[in-house]
Image (cartoon, rainbow, N blue to C red; front, side):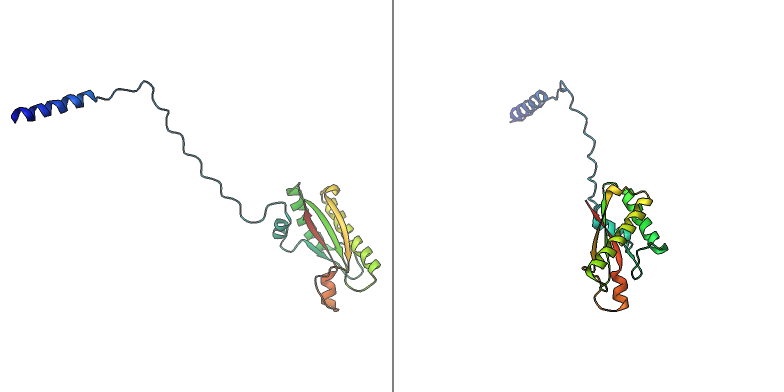
Length: 167
């Protein structure tokens, strides 16, 4: 039995000796640098879109006019400057300025007044550096009121020019 244990031990030693590790002929490549973490997708509206413009303007995408007027006052100028800054920051964005009127007056008169209001706003944007080729106008006259009612408050809200970004 003694010989058996010795024989088994020697056989194991010989077997292990035969398993000696040899250096590989070619080393594996170094580990690759870890891949950068994916950039999170932006949240919110895409820049240069109407949704982004409205969000950035915070209500300054609309200017208001006095009765039968289409002149740009100081408050309107501030809103139009903000609009121009946006449009200059996003040169791929084009805009339409829509002119509106209150319900008083004939349809034809209000369409013409809405066009004068839209054109006045467009011309001011152009004077601030926005290329005229990126701006268009349209008049809705009294056809698209935002406030219903036949009272001075509703009329004041409807006498407006609205800038809308289009692509």
